[in-house]
Image 1 (cartoon, rainbow, N blue to C red):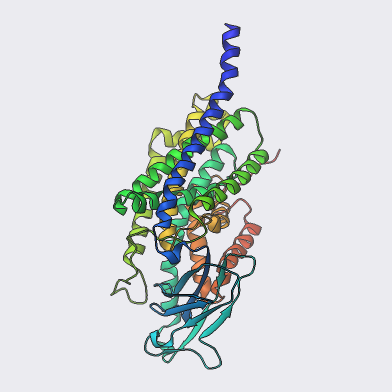
Image 2: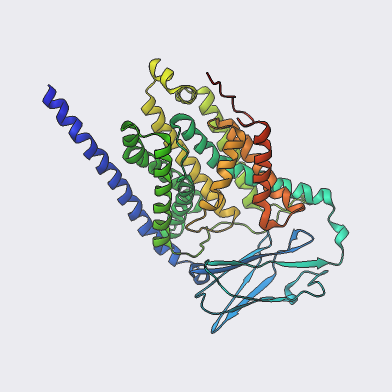
Length: 439
């Protein structure tokens, strides 16, 4: 009997290692299939370097403005979207480029201010992206009041906050049940967007089928990572600091694996609408924005019902409150943690799809760009509290968008993080967190 137990114990690490290797190989194969889908997109989107920016007048985005980029023998043209943003790929950063705003494409009553040029010379440095903004002036500034701008920004902030909440809830669940601050959560967001791109562009599936499949694959990815990496490390008794460092290494590894397969360009998911829905007054929403908000609300409501009403949901809350007491009461903590990883990965994958439409575009590091905001939402709401993450995400989303009324849009993330620091100075446990008892 003792020999049999020793044999099983000796085989267990090998099975876990094999599971991890199989999961990583599956992810690599998955990305290997996805990379032709990116290459099959528009040539400008697959180019390795990007010139991007915004065109605004009085803080309002200007849609449909033509931007022309020239440099050497290269020339490309693009238009601003409903958020006034443009993104044009270029083949090399070894030459200087000219970014021209075509004044004939400006809407009536909008012009380049006196003393400003419609042409900008740019050169790449160490980064692969250059951002240059154009600020215009309108002949009739009084057409958009402060209240109208505030309402428009607030609705956009709510949309962003709901999308952010999907990722933040999953991260908060993982922290609450395992104590892990998962810095690879941003890559789970990116994975969901890449999966949707694979199924829609690679396999030519309708987007309404591709997105649920992407969420399912993301859930499987989370299950594999827990079974092959996190559960073995927990059983070996690694502390939360060591696990956090492992997650940082995993984040870097996954990020550059994504770049190796999909390149440094930007790809677009099909089905995105750029036409603003009429009849909403000062609020500028596209059909994609409305669907995104609706999907987020339905999923969050479903998650709340699952967490509060189902048996596994109540067990999850028990493990999050006190894992030792939950185990003593007969709850299978490992099974609960496994379910939490599946749910967290699925929510992160869906958040990645919605983030790809909100940005818009899919890039290899898109999840990393909002990872700090996800952590801010979790911390603001209260570490380990799922509903706190929801509240924190909505507050962060509103602050990010509304703050552009007073500060430049390039600094909008900074404003949200400064407010986070101020709130935590007065309530360190977060808005819905509980104060720790010492002694």
